[in-house]
Every structure is written in C-alpha cells, then in structure tokens.
Amino acid sequence: MTATSLIIRARGLFDAAGGEHSRGASLWIAGDRIQAVYGAEAPAAAPGVPVLDFPDGTILPGLMDSHVHLTFGTAHRMNGPKSYDYVVEEDSDALMLQRCVRNGYLHLLQSGITTMRDLGARGRTTFDLKEGISAGLFRGFPTVHASGRSITITGGHFYFCGEEADGPEQCRLAVRRLVKEGADFIKVMGSGGGTYITDNRRASFTLEEMRAIVDESHRHGKATTTHSIATESIANAVEAGFDCIEHYEFVELDYTRKFDPAIGARMIERGVWLSPTIQTGYRQMERLRELKEQRPLTPDEEESLKYFTWKQEGQRYVTGRLHEMGARKFLIGTDAIQEFGDYAIGLELIVQAGLSTREALLSATRNCAEAFGILDEVGTLQPGKLADVTIVRGDPIADIAATGNVLQVVKAGYPLPMGALALFPHGPGAVVPPKRPRRPDPQVLRT
Ligand SMILES: [Zn+2]
Image 1: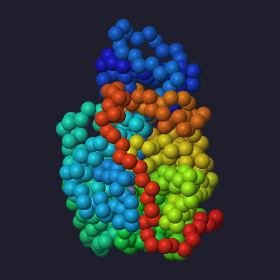
Image 2: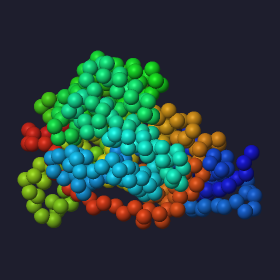
Image 3: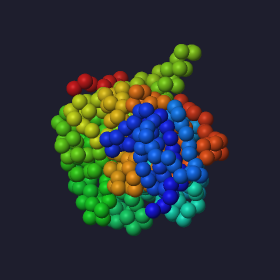
Image 4: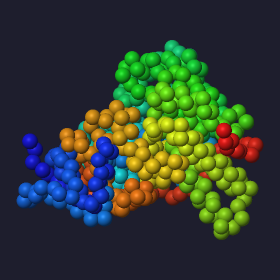
C-alpha cells in the first residue's frame, strides 16, 4: 500500500456520500488516491508527512461544472446582437485552444472546479485539448469531459462548430463521427439559442431525429444531453430518452415562460439529469441594477434588464417547481461562455430556488460524477477514489455562499499552487444588450 503523502485538516468535511464532520476532520491522501477520511480523532501521522491545515475551512469533494464552453470566456467581446458569431468569425481554432487552457485553470484555481463538462466547441479544439491533457502537458489541470462539436440542424444554434445534421441518417452519422474523434458524450442543440439567426421558442430537431441521436449514442455507450429552451424541445427530449437536459426554460411561442407540470413529471419519472444553468444572465442583471442606481438606464439597457430579470425569475421558478415535485437529479452548471471562475453564485441561486444546502452540494459533486459516468473515480470523498478536493473557507452547509471562497484545490493528490491564479488575468466584464429585436413584454407565468 502506498504511504500517506499528504494530510489535509480542516474544521469541517462533507463527503457527498452521507458523511459529514463539523468539529474537526482530516483527509489522508496516498499518491493520487484518497486513503482515509477521519473526524476529530484521527490517528497520529507518520513523521515527515506534509499537513495542510485549514482551521476555518471545510473539505469538499472537488467541485464540478456540468456545462462550460472552454473555447470562449470572451465576455468583453460579446456585446451586440451577433455575440457568439463575432467571436467565432474572428478567432482561429488555435486561439480558441489557448483560451481552453486559460479558462480551465481559471475555473480550477478560482472556483475549485476539478472536473468540467464542455458542451460545444468548434472543430477539433476540445479533442486537441484532451490530447494535450492526456499527454501530461499540464500539471493539475481539471478533468475535461468533452462533446466536441455539438450536433445542430443546418443554421441551428452553434452551427459554427461544424456539425450540422438533418434527418435521422445524418444525425446517426454525426454521432459516429464524433465518437470516432473522441467525444465523451453527445450534445445536441434541441432548440434555438443565443446564436443570432436561431429561434429559442422552437424545437430544432424533429422527434425522429432526436430518437436517432439517442439510439446511436447509446449504441456506443455514450450519454446524451440537449440544449432545450423551447417547451416543445423539452417535450421532444424527454420522449426521445435524453439522459440530461440543459436550460429547460419552458419558453413558448409568445415568449412567455410557462412551466408545464406534465412535462416536468415525465422528466422526473424518466430520471433525466437536470442541468438548469441557473446563473445564466444573473451577472448581467446585477450589473444593470447597479448601473441603474448611478444613472438612468438607456431604453436598450432597460430592455436588457427586463430580459435578464425575466430569465432569472423563470430559471428559479422552474427549478423550484421541479424540486417541489420531487426532482433531485440536479447538476450545477455555469454555462461559462462569458466568464470563467464564477461558479458559487449558481449554488446560491439554486438554494434560493428551494434546494437545501446539502442538496446543492450534492448537485455540485456526486450528481455530476454520476451523470458523467465517473462516480467510481470521483464525486465523493471515499477511500480509493481519486483525490480531487476543494477546500473552502467557512461552513457551506450553514451558508452556501462559503463555496465562493476557495482556500485550496487538490487535483489527483497534487495541491495546486493557488498563487498561480495571477498568471491568468481576467478579461474585462461587460453589460450585454439584448440578443434579439424587441419582444413583447416578457413574463413568467405561474402555473
Ligand atoms: Zn451552453
């Protein structure tokens, strides 16, 4: 048996496997694995074993993000109606690949994200990133599960990734091509989204196409997830047997958000993983509110504020309703495309929506590991698992906001040099104006 190589001591520990300590805890690591977990009374360590002490900290399983786009992180350039399209038109794959590395480390060091799932990148960029990680180019880099290009209809959301497919046969071919190149799972764009020319009120693929994608993916042992904003696309995704649904905003043709309890019940019954990306638009809303305290907003800014408030209210309402109905399979995802390293706000918002702090922590750890198919390796603090660990200041069970104060991250037994965050300067923030021409007054309908 490998000798203990590192001991982490803290005031509290949440193992995401039913165990927690609040009056002293320690985690023993041997090589890249967890060796033992103790409460206040741990045995004496052999002399010479390094100890990291966090008297005010809580030890958590490494946090996970169910939804990122590593090739972006370009908030300062995503102003205007063609937000994604400008970035994509201007930037080479080589530049995007460099951003993947920057964004991965930023998310790891600032937010304690040791595993993330990338849901859509152009060309081979995220496959190339994974090759570099496997080749050992970077020490302590987070684990990345990548879909590579997301499958979309001709002219659909993220068409610029380069995987347009129409009709069940092309959909199957797209899945096979992605699996051949190294996709860990399959992501489809089930409705329109932020891409300028798309319509997020409508389903993109037919039910038949969605079924073909699920069937083909499962034949290769790959899980599936779909970006589904429109109500119609959520219904299709559930019927087609998708393993996970992103966003599920229940947007109707008239731009109202109207949660459909019948579809919600089927999502729960079928055991679909729920990735609400609950924080999308929150920072923009917050910045506009702050701005409004300083000066009157322009009509465009007022409209943006209304749009983001509508989006935020809707996200929390839908998640709260599903939770009330018994849903527990939530995943925390940032949809980081604007800024990386801003994660804990999603946990705060999901707690505001109705989850307990423990449920929120499970959604950020164990649930993600299970949804990504890697629960035997990570997601909980148990002997034999990979030593992916995030230590935060304070007690996140008492106050979930503590997850925003990361003291130390350990990736596969390696304690990251936290000061390295300074190597990755943040891009300037931005207030993003509405993505579309004027809409009727947006509303969230309480169903
Ligand atoms: Zn996304």
